[in-house]
Length: 415
Image 1 (spheres, helix red, strand yellow):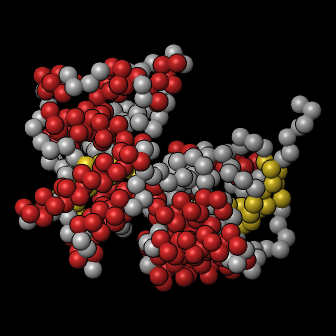
Image 2 (image 1 turned 180 degrees about the vertical axis):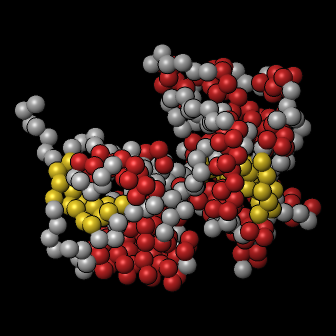
Image 3 (image 1 turned 30 degrees about the horizontal axis):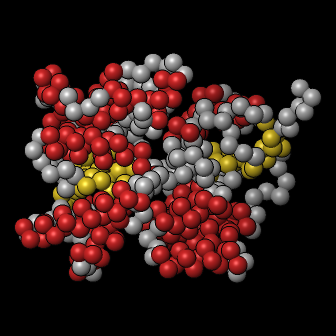
């Protein structure tokens, strides 16, 4: 189906959902993409496309799938897709979305995390059509002379004008020299892969649209074409999805948990998820949004459609139906005890703090074990981090049969 698209239709399809922060830049990249597609067609070859993922944690989350879904679109069109695992770049850590220094990982930590990445990626990508590469293959072989050669393309000012570095500069926080290497390393990845296109989030604009294009041109290759995607907000609907912030929806979870976490989204965040995570066409999205605006559709019902669609993508239609039935049974038909003890918790108390203080576990080790075994839920959502602040009030379920209504203690207005 999609293989039969014209060049113009391919450009429209591949640029859908992109976010360059500048309409002129977007149009310029669309024009370059069209030209590259024409050239590849004349040469009888597919485009070489990749996206890099740094294995800084063991698990991928829904936010990572935005770029994967774009890679999948390239696969549908018959192009060559490489899933690049940043076994070398993750030793530094990308500073693009941080205004603090990222901790450095050991090679052992990186390797352990990398083992899980490809398997999780196949929940979106076509296993048979995906090339897996590791950037340690070429970055580990660069010499100090090579680094000097690459660095000669950049000025210190280019880095200091970037917001994440500028904020640290203004606060007089340290900016370490090795952090500037990240852009050079990512740019060299694009050169090593001879990439026609590189997919990345909008936080990667400098690394892809400036550093990679500059390095590829400097080393005698055609510059890659950046396909820059919007960033998915987390379950709070505001801040970018991040495991460290506890607002993520992991891929390695259960269908029920994924469904429940999507249902916890604030209504205003649904549009972002419609466009970035679902398989829905623009006409369906418009229909749902207009239905909610007119009052014809209830946001809860639309959110259930959204939760079902996302869960089905990763777990299949049957598991999605069962997850919806479980959600309805527990939260709409109130299949939880009509009466349960209450516990007042304070701002700043962690999940483990509450379990201990409420007497739901006898020790910290028991609490951690239950959490690791996915045995603690808040309003149906699995709580995975013992040290995470309890997100909100609601029904806390410990194991299969113990329930507790946790309610936030009111702040002392006089204190």
